Length: 162
Ligand code: ADP
Image (cartoon, protein in one colour):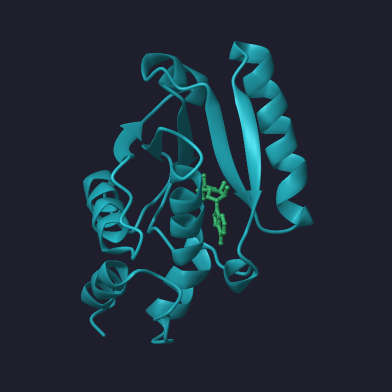
C-alpha cells in the first residue's frame, strides 16, 4: 500500500492544509495526517481538538476522501513513518521562503531513513495562509471565513468569544 504522511502542528487546520491533504489523497492509497505533539509550543487547540477539527474538515470537504486518517505524532517524523509503514512525506510549499528549511528537512529525513519528501505547490488562493496568521487575525476580530474550514471558524469564535 502506498501511504504518505502530511505532517504539521495544524493549530488549527487551514484551507491551505486541507487542499494539500485532499490532493495527496488522490495520489496515495492512504494519507496519514501526523499532528505533532510539541510540548514546548503553546497551542491554541489541544492535540485532540486539532485532530477532531481535521477529521471534521476532511469529512465536510466536497471530495470527502475516505482514505485520510489522523494520528498524533511525537519525536522524529521518520520514526512515525516507520511505525505506520509510510514511505513518503507530502508537504505544501507556499513560497521560496519555505524552501530552504524544507529542503534541509527533506534531506535529513532521507539520510536518516530513506523516506522521500514530495513538495506540492500551494493553491495560489491559499499561498499567504498560515495557522499563526489566521489566529492573529481572528483574535482581533478579523474575518477568516473562506480561509479555514467552517468547524475551525466555529472553534476560533468559541475561543475568542466573538
Ligand atoms: P508547522 O507548525 O510544523 O510549521 P503547520 O501546521 O503550520 O506546521 O503546517 C504544516 C505543513 O502544512 C507545512 O509544513 C506546509 O507543508 C503545509 N502548509 C502550511 N500552510 C499551508 C498553505 N497555506 N498551503 C499549503 N500548504 C501549507
